[in-house]
Length: 207
Length: 207
DNA sequence: GCCAAAAATAGTACAACGTACTATTTTTGG
DNA sequence: CCAAAAATAGTACGTTGTACTATTTTTGGC
View: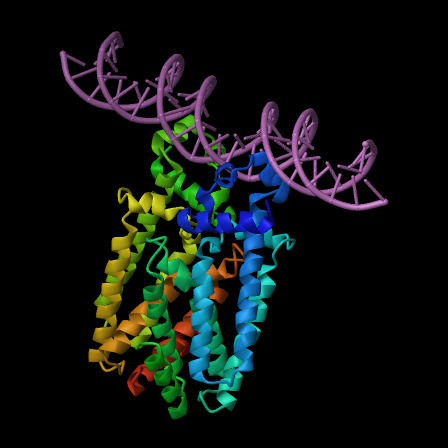
């Protein structure tokens, strides 16, 4: 048995039933090991959650890095967001709201969520600034900080809204929906070239 | 002992510690009654949650009804949203994310959350339409449906974001912050008169 | 004002949970 | 080959939600 096998199965179960409704004994049973053995790999259930969050976080970091290689266009930005949305959908079971996080977070040991948020904000700030410089967006600094606040909240909670009633909604459908909303918001601050880029992205991802 | 006394104390505890971290025994102890007696009033912990949600829901309904008496201006709309934000802050402990709801929701017995969301969407649709008719907003039907989607997500999850790290943030501060974001979003679709109305609201509420 | 019925309160118990602890088996490396 | 380490299993403890029963208190009709 390896950590990765455990995390894979755990994520499946969390996605299916929700973190709160998956027990350590159940996870062990699904893995065909004893509960005692499971705690050998992860002493606390929270540790499983934290490990998954770290997986998710590094996945997003890679997604972001490959975006930063491309030229800054609205189309590329939307593609980035689609990829991130994909990641979020894959890890939707770890979006546990504010009921389980703080225990792990406030003590700042296993997963420093707060600093992740701070970094993410800085990155979006950077992204929007470079989209402005590239002539895709037409906005002032206040607009940027508004967009950053918007995308921080929107990009964090769309998946929660989407899975409130339905733990496994149609992936392409919901991502399409929320990406569409995001594109519309972006278009409100776009130059002509920026709007063109958004439309190009839309055409490319329809047919 | 009355239901209302129990709910009052329960909300206090939920706000302070989070729903998942308040036990039935603890709630009983705080009320100076026995656990057995508590279950006489609320058979399940979920029932406490559902009752609080109903309180919250009717409070919002009243808030909304008094708005509908006023003339449709952006200023009045922002005042409405401030009042709703106030309500949400007061009941922030019941915003438990998608971990505890579904059990009560899917079975559709104690609190039909899904229908609440549907109704709320219809109401916002109505509100934006009448703001358009009143010359406050300048938007087409697609814009309205965008704004409705925006405000549904934003209006649901701002409080979750605000309390992710800090269970009791400064109320006026956070409400000011998120109301400011909302006003900016609204201004993107406002007529001159609408923008004026937003500014009037802002002046009135700064002192 | 009594007294059965109802309401309210208390106490106990059970299954499930997270998890700590110990014992046992298997694998590893000099 | 064999001691050390890693991996696995088993057990047990405290806590949780909650079901159940017993007891006390309140109520309403005669």
